[in-house]
Image 1 (cartoon, helix red, strand yellow):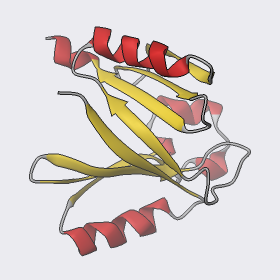
Image 2 (spheres, rainbow, N blue to C red):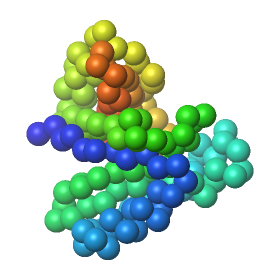
Image 3 (tube, rainbow, N blue to C red):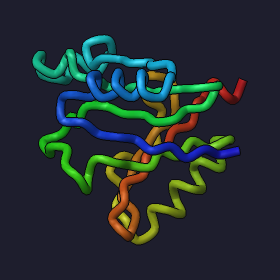
Length: 140
């Protein structure tokens, strides 16, 4: 079954917030910094301690995902929450991406990323940001 998760954007305090949520919710925190990824080579050194991606899981379910905002824009209410769609199949993910992009603006085409998943994002015609991720390892 496809899943939909909230994805929070922080302005440099993602680790602090996710550790707080971890304690408050009794969840398991997974966190990856920019400096731990191949993306660091294209990013300024001062961003290497920023959170590239994190998630909180409890009882095998993802509760929330988050990262530090890494664009010229700063995180503020209105751009700090996205919807992350994780499809059950690649075809389903591609179809949802295509359908939700109609009348909207694709900001990153669906493509295989360095972490091994198919990923893309867009703003729908109502201005909401959607992130799409399909774990290619699910095909095995």
